[in-house]
Image (tube, rainbow, N blue to C red; front, side, top):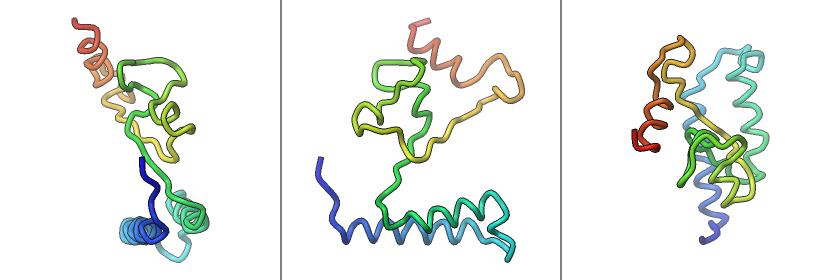
Length: 110
């Protein structure tokens, strides 16, 4: 794994902040909203490094599924990702069939 250069870090940081500025077009009271607080926090920590995000990080990984606390990112990078995103796929509405049930059946061969 190669280390990114300072120039690459700056480009990535500027790109992320530009995207956030476009997405989070906020009114003057923005810092009182969750999105505004997130934008302010990201702007504050942008010089500390790069934040990495991962989809369904603690749900499943390479050759494992449903192991509490496990994460491929944790095992390879030494820490959980800064940002995690999860697909609710019906959990919130009590649906019996959801993406995790499908993954379980697929990985168990049923």
